[in-house]
Length: 311
DNA sequence: AAGACGAAAGTGGTTGA
DNA sequence: TCAACAACTTTCGTCTT
Image 1 (cartoon, rainbow, N blue to C red):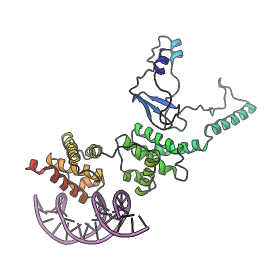
Image 2: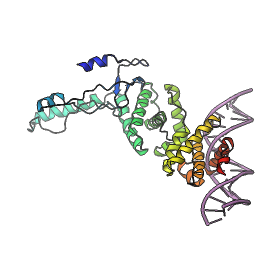
Image 3: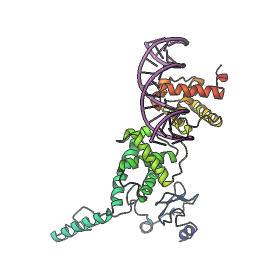
Image 4: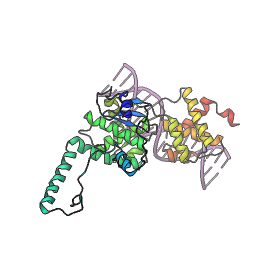
């Protein structure tokens, strides 16, 4: 029971919302509130046992049972289910009477599991989240974060009157940015049935109502992504990032679409490193116009005195 | 002929009176 | 609520390689 002891040092209520519903994420070393998504504690130590078993008896005693809980299932993956087989534990067929009993049990088991409208909503929402995040090939961390944001929105009664799809998409957008793997509004809108405009509106609602703290989209994150897509060398990618940093220092990044800045930096860097990409190629994969890339890159060249290193 | 260039006109969103 | 505005887009004719 030395494990219990270690855990007593750790908080068990969320300072943000007072919920006791905290889960420990040992991969990231964080204690997270499942109600509002706040990180209650970080840098915690994974004290789950690394058990060894020397006999089958020990193994039976020490096995850990069940799958890890996950926020992407509406009940966090904790529920039990009554099996569909009409047989008892010994594999014998059930009598007619028993069969009927089990039918009713199953029915009520399902009903109680998915009973509240919130739960029903979440069930649908998590399915949609699954679909969307795999379409966008988003990693698990983003998915979990999106799920947290959505739960928070649900608790704040922001979903009623709006479509689940809409709010899930907005949550995904927010989560991707929070995790520094931004997807553009366009990319997400393309995978859903709504416009960039509607998505943006839903996202702003989330931002405002939930007071989410989301870092401004950093062009550097887009540089990594798009440079990889354009097969730019590591050196050229690093140069492009450096360029963005210089641009930030020169105050010329505010108000500009971070995507177009990334595009311009990639363009310049590709030329400087003898890996010349055409404006059209870049425009294609980052989905801004050539004209915009031109404008941005002219500006960068001028403000950062890049011309001198070109000749 | 492909790519780069930039002018002109239009769009959607933000800001400030 | 309206007008001004900045960023971005679309389109297109022209220059450069």
